[in-house]
Length: 338
Image 1 (cartoon, one colour):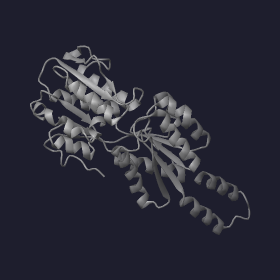
Image 2 (cartoon, one colour):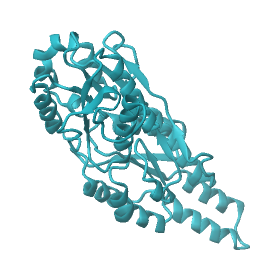
Image 3 (spheres, rainbow, N blue to C red):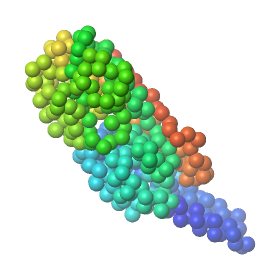
Image 4 (cartoon, one colour):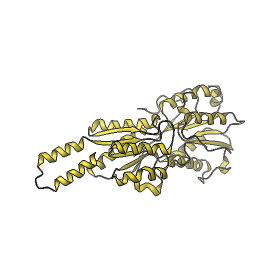
């Protein structure tokens, strides 16, 4: 791969008989073979597919870049993510762009080996824990604590009650970005703390929540329906798409449409993928706040390209992308999905 070609080029540079034509040949070979892998928490999630399209966009202007895409097939499985990465390394990659599901597992089962092979890593969407961040060059994605605050503030706009109960739904309980979002929501609602809500500022969490779905679409929808069927259902806040990616969501929520319209039921979700905006425009969600996965993939690829080809390290440790607000009234034009 490119790393080997660079090493060979350095060796040739030390030889007196190296000609200009030989140098140009090696430079051309190197430039034609930069393989960058994009690995999400799951493979069949349009969010991560948009990030891959961002990589392809950069590659369309830089033909030396080859983008590969993979991830656990159906849900957020920490072991499968490492297996996928290790298989990609065996196939041959020059750089890895990855969304972290479990920081400790990812580092010990994959990233330590990548570091020994001098394969650079950039995280996107979900960063490594602070103690592990020396295993990556930079993070590209939302400021997840601020994203959680935005979700919490959106929830507050939808209720006029002085005392409220909320149920948050997450994916894997160890996932760094989702835990930061939960902390941000708690801080926004309590105005003082990131701890579990037990009445602070008039907010408490349902005694069965947070719910952890592992990103499984069927399980996510089952959890949501269980909450909606309780007496006086709590406000439901998903810190990622989850149930709204389930193709049966529309049919399951249709009986609750009038209650959502009257705000007797409030459902807020992170992310604004096309299937989610369809749900929102039908009045089956109260509000969605979206991110920019396409730019996460494009910028990550640009940073990786410049590091691999020019030894240019990212100038920042964190590159934060924007997020946007979608409601039933602007669902058709609040964002662009690639």
